[in-house]
Image (cartoon, rainbow over all chains, first blue to last red; front, top):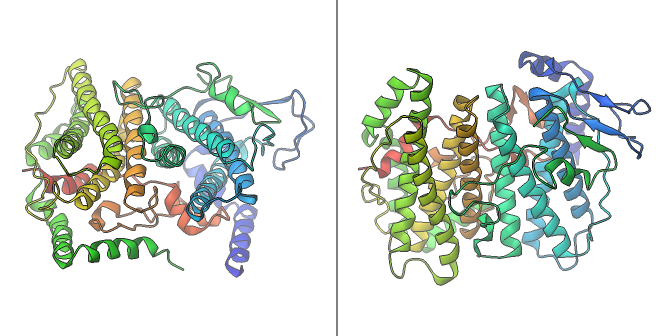
Length: 239
Length: 260
């Protein structure tokens, strides 16, 4: 517990001081702009978003892509946090550990993006998980599978639009972990089958994961994410 | 508190398999280090070093030829395993066959792409999956086979990731590389879990494999910031949730041990 308090103190001081800002300024990360539409009533840095017709656009260029990733990581972190708050009944210990690990990974991804984007970060999003039965294994793991596969295809699809090589490597560091998650979740659902890298997500002829740009397909990744969002996002300045 | 159960599990696994197995592994680890100097595929290495900045197209095809070499290795490894009666238990046949199918596709795709870009695909090298005898039972002992599969998949993920930045602006070629990269990660997760490990890499824990494969995975520093200062997520999770890239020279030092 003491270590956690220490972490929190470091966390607070790092945001109080221009520490992270300086580092990311060096990377040029704060050069983009974020369009926030219809959000006059909302403060950027807190989570008090009102429901209604408000839409947050993730922005353009590399910043837009990173904000898009940030939105997806927020979604994943919120989902697994809820999963781990009250696990479905008679969950085996190994499964509990696996889902707790993934929760921690997504929280770290989310917090990292928030700090990396600094002033350009979109707001903290609010979620509606009412479509998920958190006491039902199939509902939880089915959602987890969809979110992880979506994450993989989103990072892969956005990669070609990233102009800064450092960001591309960064996205690469994260996407392979999302793919590891997807594989593990799929194996929990269908153990020792071909599903961990099934023909539904990996093209059986080319051996390529199916990647998608934010607005491609129906439902698009943006639309899929919006299915869980109270405040909707858009990626109108991305492909 | 260090997260050591994985190492303990790996040690237990290998001690159960007998001391000769342990000796073979320590030999393999030594070989892994020596391989950098002995077993490098020099032609490929030099060609890559010299030509990588020659022109945009040759830079790209050189990277793709590097990827092709790794895919040749994986493809032949799984094809040989799948073709060896009695090696892969019935329970694991479906998984290994699915991985093998993808590696074969990657070989075909890369060869085609290199040709389309006006390059010449490198020939398949001759492989020695025993790595000079260190893994003598690779195709007779499934534990060894799976350990090497783990090594190749995790190394493959790092290898593709290490080249992503050099493919910025390459459109479809970059997208294809990314779409292979994540498939290798799906494979890696599955194979690791079949070995009783987590699907992700904790710290730089090597799970009984040569440490060189996981060198640098215990990294907290992303984009110049120590992520431990940004999040309440535990430190081990921070190392798990960012996979680290690996440079071509290091990858070839590892893969070179398996190339004649």
